Image (cartoon, rainbow, N blue to C red; front, side, top):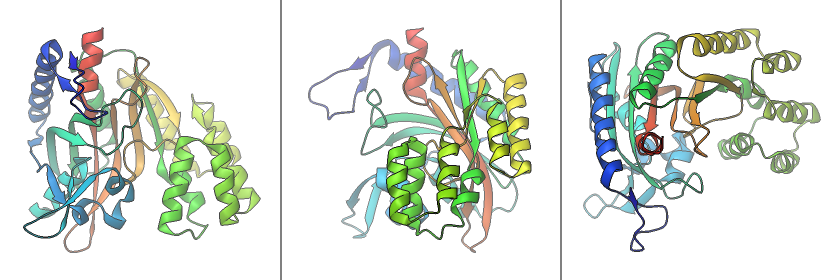
Length: 319
């Protein structure tokens, strides 16, 4: 059980007794499974230079991280709030042009809790594929199998495509900071804040109406008809239908479309997804497509996911 010591900061807990045992079993089972699928086990460092995985490339990641000054280098360091971007750094260092597969497990720390019930420290286990082809269905299947290993049932997988919102925002000539703020408001589905923000930015009413409509585009396949009405690219709509059918027929998840939900941090570009249980008020797994930049300046495609295995353990023990 979690220890509720008064000597710990808010949003921090010890894992003890049966939960600690189950956590260790789950960690080992997942890593064994991923290694059997040819993923290379990797243990990234707990701390990083702040400009290595944060900075202008990812404001939300840096905004979530504890930072401090390094006495040796005099540079700013962060305690990692995310492991995927560390794996991207490692992949860049290995300078491979071919497909690379990584799996990992480790603690992450955030400055603030994502929800009332969530700790600021958790243990993440995940996988990343760099330089491959279209691996989305393999990744979704592996996430489903991971939940089965965790003995978790009745889960929903919410998914969307970042291109839908990007296709609207790219014509607004917003600064990076304005774009980040707007994405955050839309993800939280706060229509009142959105209207205030768009009024400040002096956005055309037609665009405002389209964004308000997008915020309601979450649910079953009936969402597709709404997307067609506001003239979202047919190729993207077809892909949403294809992903829905795969999740419904080939995984243990119940599919759910949400085109303005951007779980985790804001580096994903393309497919984004998150796994949910009705027993928790936050996602237990997040993932999607993204790009990493190599030392030569070229981009490298990637896709992956991570899971909150403390949350998975609590669900398993609870059931």
